[in-house]
Length: 564
Image 1: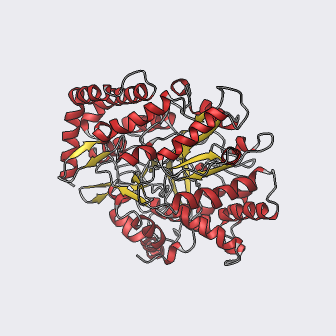
Image 2 (image 1 turned 90 degrees about the vertical axis):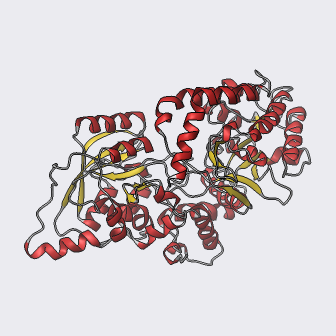
């Protein structure tokens, strides 16, 4: 596939394990558009705007929006969600303006606003939806526009190439009966899951970095028994851990999925066997084997003995406070959760390692669902192409614009990206690796710094400052260097054997039964790992899971997969 548009690397919101929002809209088909009629001498200009990815509208188009807000938007004085650097940029480029029909903080509050809008029928032209269940509801009730034609005509070549990098997986999430009913987010690959270790502790104990699970077990034993951090007898934690989000989000902070992959166990994923039969990864025999290893580590004191009562913040405190010598995550570790650890008196040195390696050095993983949220357009809105035209600007043109004062203003003020009208990320599968290469090329003098995308310039400056003084204690240079010169190369240079889940969606049975089944799953896994229940209790869990709705849901998923 040609990549000429991807030579300029997008550098949008790199983390966030990992948590993104999306945009969706719906309403009754009689709701009137707020723009002028397309008549007379402007008719050709209106037609061009409706079919050209970058053509502005000849007259101002005001669209209503359901807006998910941010806890700390960091607006400059006088700015708002209807008037900020992003909205002004869009008005300048496309001649469009949002009028927010409702605003609510992203998450449960926003989801409730969406539900109320659907129930009342008072729907904005465009709004965000954060899950497939809501999207299905909108589609089944004929409340949203078919965006197939709008995408073909108005998605820029750059945006289309980004979606192509997922081999159809992203657009498929928003396609119903062959029609594209929403614009899905596209989240880049995360590389191999990593274990981050206190390198200064390894050096103090004269230990080499681990490759296999056996190697990692030995390192954790040495950390716990020899206390290289000077915490005191019995106070050093080997592997930091929390009872939150242990499985189901490969590469996320605290996720054990990278370890379980060694056993070809894929928790919380709907997989397909060689005969085409669908099964739920958390009930597969491989899970029992993986759980037995973690239970053994816990019994030996290698995993935080308080993991069952720690939330994520509490777990992070063991890392930043110098008690823990290891944590599971991915390339982003220097951004999260390590900054406070770097501030420790005397400093701390962390390094990422690819563990759970197979005999050939590769690791096993599953492809994450690239889509976390969606943009939808109200049925009957006069300009269904508007959403994709805005996304062309937000997700590519804006972040690669090196001259715009609006871009500069947003970066200088550290304005939250969630203040964009359509808060959705569209990034190609190799987005992170491309950013890394661009930053390194600038450091090596292969490309001019002024040619960097606006946000990559920030990372470049941090790395440059680090190399000018490698003994620096300033946080930004340390974070940027460790992220781009340690985290990304470790995660993305690894050989990963990706397994593709068969299904990411929601069935009718899940709506009624999944909450209880997931509670059973999470509680059982935690009890086995923490030795509250024996490993053999896994067999009883599987039978209970099947008999209380699991078999029914598996049948529904099989039908969905067979009908694709």
